[in-house]
Length: 357
Ligand SMILES: Nc1ncnc2c1ncn2[C@@H]1O[C@H](COP(=O)(O)OP(=O)(O)O)[C@@H](O)[C@H]1O
Ligand SMILES: [Mg+2]
Image 1: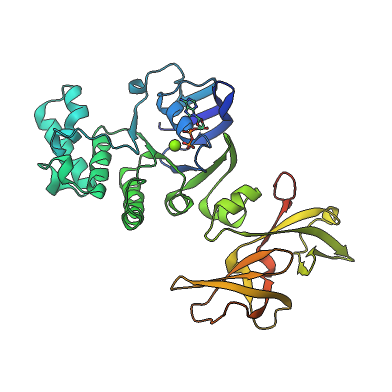
Image 2 (image 1 turned 180 degrees about the horizontal axis):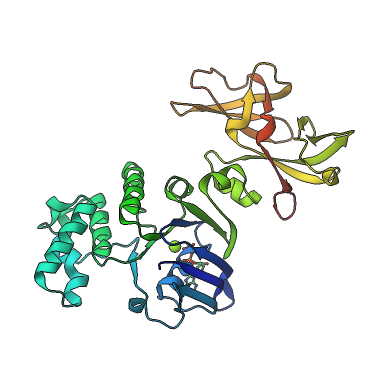
C-alpha cells in the first residue's frame, strides 16, 4: 500500500522551525500537491518523506511501516528533482537504465523496462542521444523515465518543471496528469506555482511558514479558502481585499467600508455584526457597469485576449481589479460603477486571517 501517514512532523534548523508540526494523510494513488511560497518548508517536508532529511520530531508511516529510521533506498519511493542531474557521459538509454544496472538486473529485463519507461514519456527516439543533445523538455522526460523505470509505488517530485519555459511547463502539466492516470501510482509533488497545483492535483496542501493552511480539492480551495493567505495565494490576479466591518440592520447584514456597501448572504451569523472584517472578492466577481451603484475611477486596463483586467480606485488609496469582457473599452480616468456578485464574497478575520463563516 502506498498510503503515507504523517503525524506532527517537525524540522528545525538551529532556532528556525522550517516545518512546524504538520499532520497529513496521503491516500493510495492520489496526486497530492504541496504548494506555498518559497521558504515555507515544502522541500524539507518532501525530503523527510524520502529520507534525505531526518525529522526533529513526529512520525512518517508508509503503508504500515514507521520509516523514520529507514534509509531512502529502503522506503520504496521514486524521486524526481528540480535539478535533473543526468549523467552527461551516458546516453539517454544508460541514464534511464542506471538504477537497474546498479541492482544487477539482467540485460534483457533492463531493455524491456527502459523501453516501457521511454514510451510512457514519449522519448523512444532519444535513447541513443546524450543529455547535451536534448532540449530542456526532453531532459525533463528523461529524468521522469529514470524514475518510472524503477517502478516505485510513490513518486516524490520537487518542482520538476521549474527549469522549463512557460509554454512547455503548461504542456508538461497535461502530460504529468495523464502519466499519473496511466501509472496509478501515488504522486507527491511540490511546487510554488498555484496554477500547477490547481490544474494537476487531486488534493492540494497549502503551506505557509512551516504549517498547513488548508487541505482540499482544487475547487474547494479556490471557492472556499480557509484563510486570507490561501485566498490571496490562489487565482490570477490576486483576490481583492477590502477592510471594513459587518453591520446589521434587522435581519439583513452587510459589509461596509466607507463608500463600499455590500449585502451579505443570510447565512452570515448574527454574532458577526459589528465585527471588523476583510471582504475578499475575486476579480471575476467584481461586476462593472449597468445598474451598479458603487463608484470608482479606472486607472489602467490590461487586455489578456479572452478577458481584460481593469484596475480602478475607490478612494482612500484603495484599488480594486475587475475581470471584464475582452471588448469592454474603459479608458484611464474614466468614472465607472461596480458591485460585487452577491454569493461569491469571502469574509476573513482582520487579525488572524481566518475565514469568518
Ligand atoms: N539545511 C538547511 N539549513 C538551514 N536552513 C535550512 C536548510 N534547509 C532549509 N532551510 C530553511 O528552511 C526553510 C524551508 O526551506 P525549504 O523547505 O527548502 O522551503 P521551500 O522548499 O518551501 O522553498 C527556509 O527558511 C530555508 O532557508
Ligand atoms: Mg523547495
